[in-house]
Image 1 (tube, rainbow, N blue to C red):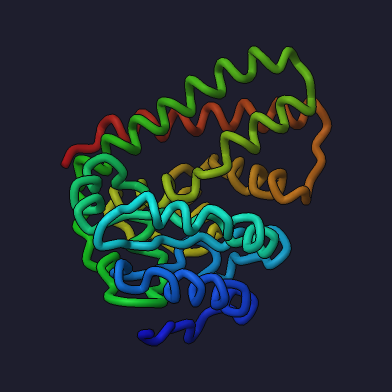
Image 2 (cartoon, one colour; image 1 turned 90 degrees about the horizontal axis):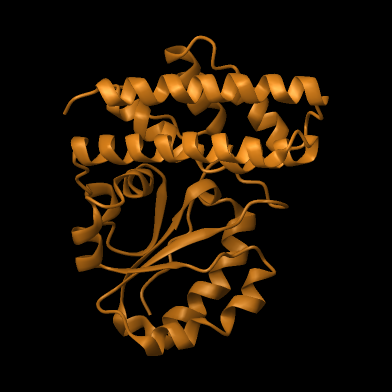
Length: 247
C-alpha cells in the first residue's frame, strides 16, 4: 500500500479518517487514483463537534462493486462525522468543470491530497462558466427566499430557519465571486465575509447570519425581519453585479 499522507492535518481529523482510508485502500487500492480531504476539515474553521469531514475519491473507473463496498461503512464512520465521499473519475472531472465550476474552484483552493497524485491544484476553471453558475445560483437564492418568506407566514422560527438554510453553502459561492472580481479568495469563512463586505459596504448582514447559524445570537422577530430585508437587498445587489461582469 502506498503512503497515506496526513501531515499537517488537524489531529482530530487525521485520527478519524485514517482508519476509513486504510479500509478503502485495502479493499480497492488498485482502482484508486487519488484521495483528498476537502472543505473545513483542512482549515482552522473545523469544529470537531459540528463539522463533517468531507472527501473526494478519484477512481480509474466507476464500479457498482465499489459503491456496494462503501455503503456498509457509512453507519460506522458516519458516527465520527465522516461524510460519504464524493466518487469521481478523471474523465468525469474533465467533463464536469463547465457544469460545476464553483465546486471545483473550491476544491482547487481548499484540499489536502492524502493519497496519490494531486490533480485538483491544476484544474483550469473557465471564467465565463464560473460567472454563469454564480449568476444562476444567486438568482435561485433570490427566488427561494422570496417564496420562502411568503411561506413562513410571519413565523419567527420559520424565518430563522429560512435564513440559515439560504445562507448555508454561500461561502463557496462568495469565494467564486471574489475570484471573478480579480481578488485572491480567502480560505477562512470570516475572511471571505470580510472581503465581500469590502465590496458591498452594507453587507454586514453576512456577519449576522454567521452568528445566527452558529446559535450565537437569538434576535427578536422585528430584528430577524430586518436581517431578512438586509440579506435580500444585498443578494439583489450581488446578482446585479454578477450580471454585469464579462469574461
